[in-house]
Length: 68
Image 1 (tube, rainbow, N blue to C red):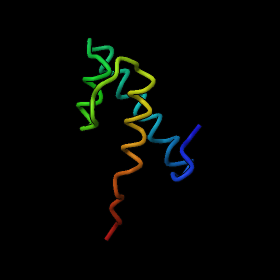
Image 2 (image 1 turned 90 degrees about the horizontal axis):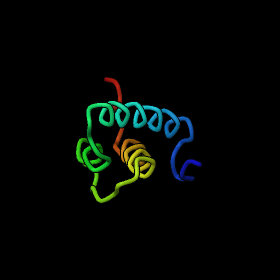
Image 3 (image 1 turned 90 degrees about the vertical axis):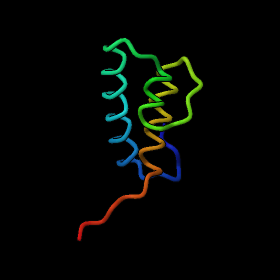
Image 4 (image 1 turned 180 degrees about the horizontal axis):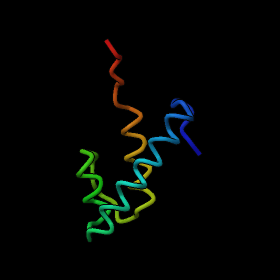
């Protein structure tokens, strides 16, 4: 379930990207804290699903740049 204050399409895309990035980090022997650190999100979890959700939320919170 996506947060209500975020565009559902944007959150779905961010969730897919976060899953992909976490899968690469897991494959390379990293931990959920390593994934959070890579995205500059406050670490402190040992659960991959929490890490994926936090990364997706941080991607949605970042301001979007507009084209010139």
